[in-house]
Image 1 (spheres, rainbow, N blue to C red):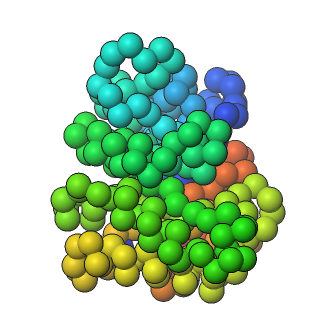
Image 2 (image 1 turned 120 degrees about the horizontal axis):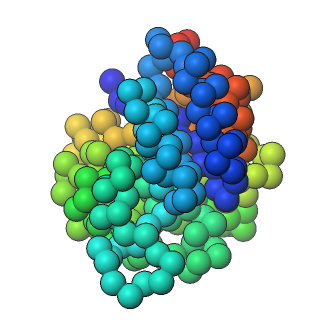
Length: 253
């Protein structure tokens, strides 16, 4: 059975009192029988505190990005060594906002993915198409290119441990959601591409998430599709109650 994961991406939100309140409520109401693994993806400044707050719980803590270098003259950057040092276990790489606003490319994504594995961090690689690409019927070819470049130079074992998050750019924070059939089609294509790069066994084991206006009302339907193994969630992860509802969807599986 593939691992199912709900990752909450807080983006540039929350204060220290807010994260303490969030974690207290999340842990207090955490569904013990859920088959879903929960990950909180937070700004750098709160990661160390979150690792402490999550200690002894099933909740993992992720960074929202990182540099691919271990150290050096990179003012304002955070290295994989630093993330590993404070107990972070996962890192989001190549989110569409990082690609759009900070010039990240498939090549820089690949460098970061390799660095993540070097330092025992599990990468969550984001891929997705724009509305223009979807309307031009370029979705599958664009996603395939992102996958092949993002996973380049990895071993089969590393690819198996990678989490891939399909986030159609046109559905992020817009209230629009790809239908479960649309999302499942692309996630199925991602699985096929992974199979081409590795083998049938690994393609069936890799975790593929969907992201894009995911909320408690649509999560069960998404999780019941053949190829979707969880979600990378934005707005619905900012409140402990709604995030817990997403995790509780795993009880129904």
